[in-house]
Every structure is written in C-alpha cells, then in structure tokens.
Amino acid sequence: MKILTASQMREVDRLSTERYGIPSLLLMENAGSGVVCAMEAHFPDLTQLRVAVCCGKGNNGGDGFVVARHLMLRRIEPQVLLFAFPDEIRGDAAVNLSILQRMNGSIRTVTERDATEEHVQRLFQGLEADLLVDALLGTGVRLPVSGFLGSVIQQMRRFPRIVAVDIPSGLDCDAMTESADCLAPRCELTVTFTAPKPAHAFASSEAAIQRWVLVPIGSPVELVDVPAHWLNVLSEDEAAVALRHFHRKGDSHKGDYGHVLAIAGSVGKTGAAALAARSALLAGAGLVTLATPAPCLPVVAAQMLEVMTEPLDATESGGISTRSFDYGRVNAIVTKKDLLVVGPGLGGHTETASFVRRLLAETTVPVVLDADGINAFVGHAAELDGRNRLLVLTPHPGEFARLLGCSTAEVQANRVGIARDFARQQGLHLVLKGHRTIYVSPSGEVFVNPTGNPGMATGGSGDVLAGILAGLLGQVLAGLPSLETTRQANELREGAKEASSESRLLEQTIALGVYLHGLAGDKAAERQGEKSLLASDIMACLPAAFLRLEDRASTTR
Image (cartoon, rainbow, N blue to C red; front, side, top):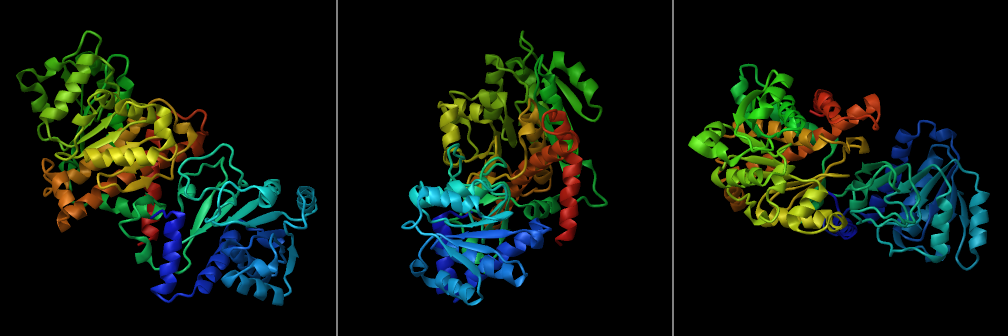
C-alpha cells in the first residue's frame, strides 16, 4: 500500500478532478461519509453517543460538515463548532456548510476576534459530548500551530475519545519520527483517505494516532501506484497475497523448499544460533544446516532434532576461526545451499570478523547478514556489495550506526533517508529494525512494517527475524532456477520483464518476513502480555501468524 506525502496527496486530488473529471465535491462527500462508516464500525454504540464536530475553515472542515450531515441522517444530532467566520469558508466546504445550515444543523460559530483563551476553555468545559470529531485542520496546515487555534487544540486534548478526520490537528502529516512535544490531541480513531500518510505509518499507540483506517474516496488507483511514490506500508491483505507464493504442492519434497545454511554461534551465544536455525525451519525451509564452532556443536545439536550440524574450527575464545577455510572445508559446506544466514551469536573476535568478510568475498551464495556478521564490516562497509549476489542486512540502529561511522541518534533522526541512501548505494536489501521496522530494496522502495510491539525489544528477537527471512528466501530461491545469484542484482537493474518479476517477488518475500515476525510477536503478546515476552515465544507463535494470514488469504480470493 502506497504512502503519500501531503503534496503528493494534493496532486492526486488535483489530477482526479482535472484528468478524470471526478468532481472535488464528490471526493469530499465520499470522505465525510466514509468517516461516519468507519465510526459505526469502531463504535458499536455510536447512536447512543453525544457527538461534537470541530470544524475549521478549510477542506478538512468541509469534510467535518459532511460528517455532521451523515450523522444527522442516522438520527444523531451532532453539535458543530465552527472556529471561523462562515464567510471565510470557500469552495466545496462552503457548499457543504450551506447544506448543513439548510438542514437546520446545530452550528456554533467561535472566532478568534470574539474568543479569548479563557472563553475557549469555558466553551469546551461546558461542551456536553461523549465523542469529539476533529475536523479542525488538515494535512496542509503550517506548523507549529499557535494562538487561537492552538488554544482550541489544547482544549480538544481534554476529551478521552476523539476521531480525527484525515490527521489529528497540529500533527505533521509528513513526519517519519514522533515528537515528544506534539500539540495534536490523542485520537482513538483516525480516518484517512486514498492512501496513508507518513505520520499514520510511523505512529505508535501512545502517540496522537492510536489507530488508523483507510477509506477510498474515488481517486483512481493509477494515480497512487506510480514509481515516484516509493514509500509503502504492507497491509494485512497484501501480506496474505504474498503468502500465496508459498503454497505447497501435493507432490513436492523437502528439496523444493530450499536448503538454508546458518553460520552462527560461539561459546556463550549458542542460543542465538539455535533461534535463527529453528526459525528458518518454522518459516518453511525444507532443510537447515547449522555450521558452528566445534565446542558449540553438542549444545545446539541437543536443542534441535530437525537441524543438521557442521563443526567449524574455533578460536581460543570459542568463535569461528579462519582455519575453517583450510582444505576447502567452508566451500564444501556452502556447496548446494540456497541461502546463508550469517551472524547470530558469532561474537566479536577479530579472527571471526575476518572469517565473515572472507566468506562474503569468496562466495556468491545469497546471504542474510545479521548481528555480529554486520559488525564484522565496521570499517569495511564498502565491501558490502549486493550487485553480484542477493545480500540482505538486518541491523538494529546501533549496529547500523557503527557500520556507517555515525551515532545512533543520527540514524534515528533520519531512519528512512539514511537507510535508503545506503541500500541504493550498495545495491543491497536493508531491514532496519526498531519501532516500525523499515525494509529498503536496492531500487529504493521502502516498506514500513505495521506489526510488532514493545515486548519484542528483547534479546534474540533479531535472531528469530534473521531465521524467518532465511527460511522464506530459501524457498523462493529454490523455486527460481532462472535466478542466477551471481548476476541477479545486475539483471534486476536492467529492467527485463523476467528480472523485474523476480525483483518484485524478492521484495514481497522480505516485506512478508518482517510482517510475519511482528505478527508472531503480536500473537505472543496477546497470549502472555509484553513484559514477559521472550524471543522463543515469538518463534513459537510463528505458526499462528502463518495461519492468520492463510485465513485472510482464503477470504480475499
């Protein structure tokens, strides 16, 4: 699902009218009626609630007038508070205000000239309403909001139940980070139109946008789905469609579903290796082999009956030694594997880091690089080249900052921009973990993940994600004999139809893996809460996440 900025949304609205002849008045009508339908779905007792609608002088206020009218059609008598002079209302908003007046709607006008801050405060204190509809300011407002309208927003924040029309008033529509001093009210429900905006996709449940829903209002899809709109959020329906690629045929065998090699673990960190390997199996990989330092092998082998193991030479501290390359040992292990997942629990020994860099330099097998595998390239980031192989990096912000030689705060301040620049420059796939994990493809497409919860901020969660991605990608690569990984990225960039199709499949698979990881975490949180959530709980709930999407897919055929 495409995410549009405020300026992109205005262009879509303009072209809907100018190119397709869709009246802007109809778009406003569909928006307002859509808000009321969303309210009915969210509030089962809507007809029993006292509703007040706060309207400004722009098109957002016009949407509010339509909301009020459709509430009246449902025999709900809303109080409309207009925070502007009626003669300031123009265009479609003026038309809808006039209709509401002719229907004898209850409209109270409050203007800056007549209302002091104390007057506004008394107005809201005396307002008898259970539910407030925020149609004061839209996506085009200049921020920050102060003065009269700032006082109005401050008073709106007193209400515990608020529905925002398009965006909570005072919130930066294009914001990809959350501001602690945001003026906007905390809205139980936000109803946006045509496409979500960045503020919707990056919101947390504690912020102004607690829950958002999307309402189509008639804008042609082809105006939204254009290459220039590179920011996306994966919806549940889209994730369910992507899962259809993993349908299992009745006459299939384990070789059809990929052989994943996990190179992971060190003394004291065997759990990370076990989590990654088992998660790859649970994600559907036909075969998984775990190559780990010899001292670790008995520990991990005892934990997982279904995972094959290979011992590697160890350093004195129990990490993987470069001696593992002797006599072609590594090449023999890597042969006939569809994908490698490298890094979970490897440790920070300098010799182990050298092993990882040499492994990537001397092989072209697709790789999911995680944790200490990424740390191995600190100071060597230029060597991470995804143009000659499928390369997926899964850093958390601290690991990514070390890789780039900057601070974690710098990464967090511009997560999307920094991640997108690096992925495009290096020709690789980048999954930057954290609140609203983002995935960036080599072409610069960005997917914001809507699933997950704070309980997943626990050790081992990233190892589970790496395993899920490896398991899914291993299946895809095993089923794509035309996808020669030594030339895959270059061909994808040439734009051939076949390569383009494969590129989209890889994007969908990685986005799906991130979605499933978060959904499994949400399932675990539903079962036991966030505070006691462990990485192994996420892994244990992965089957439930698959079943949820399979059920969804069966209802959307």
